[in-house]
Image (cartoon, rainbow, N blue to C red; front, side):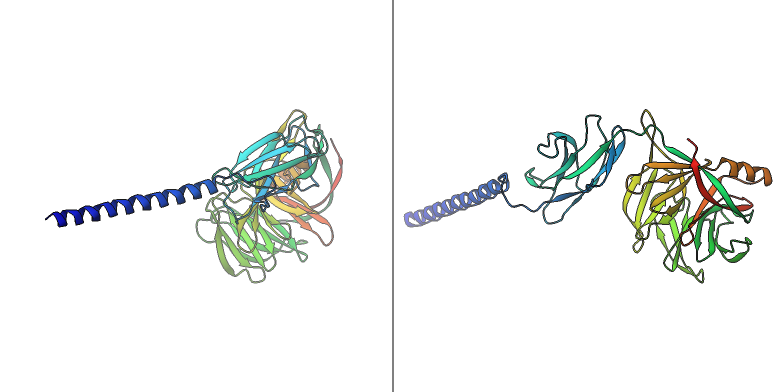
Length: 389
């Protein structure tokens, strides 16, 4: 009996000793790993940058008192938890002014430019991992500072030609391609895409939209026509030559106007925001918020409607306005207005049901600009005139 007890005692003692030894090893490893993960990187550690500033890129001008965007891109080779933005007023010698702290996936911060800024400013982004270790910072980019504009230029126009237009067409989109107008029309039960002879107004080809859809803007991308709908969150793709259906695409916001800059689709949704889409995947890749600079402050420009890309600028109808905004695609700033009040008054007097100005098309081969409106009896060819104010 004594031998059995002694044997059991030895077994229990050995098990207890093993348990304690295993726990000690586990604790040691745990401490070692934790100590490793919380070690702040040395200043001269070679760590690949985890974020890079893509705006400003060295060529932009930021206006004191206005709102502008800082954009950055985060890489995927290290987990990034947050990004701090700083600016420098001494050409990059010190970055002591904090702009904001944001999530890396935000990729954008709207910054009101402080009055303390002067020329030779720089912005830097610093990324942190989940343990708040500095994960690498960016190269900084110099940008210029200018005084707030006192007014936005407003142009008049010269009327060059007037062409017939279908007074039953609730114009939502207008495109000029290969000496021909393409038009998208709206209203449920009346929406369509159509090919129109400019000189006569004759409808050469038409496809009517079926179902409860309210057609909106159109654009031509290579051999396809893209058409938005207002509140159905769906757009349609057609073959440019035959108007045959090629599919549809979806988006979470309202659809108003659409154009392209040769590489990206540009979409309006009735707010002050313009979105840039990949034309192959029809997914968003960027956006800008459109604003106007006035003597005392900056103001958003909402109700952006039909769009056209003209000589590196975005032209936009503003719903229920007699003005066309000329917008910088880089900043969203309204650089000028085209006032078309006289055309609106002319159409109101000639055809009672005529509605708001809407529809911009550009002939980039012959440098011709066309405008019209909903139910208007004419499409006008115009040129921009001298500054009015």
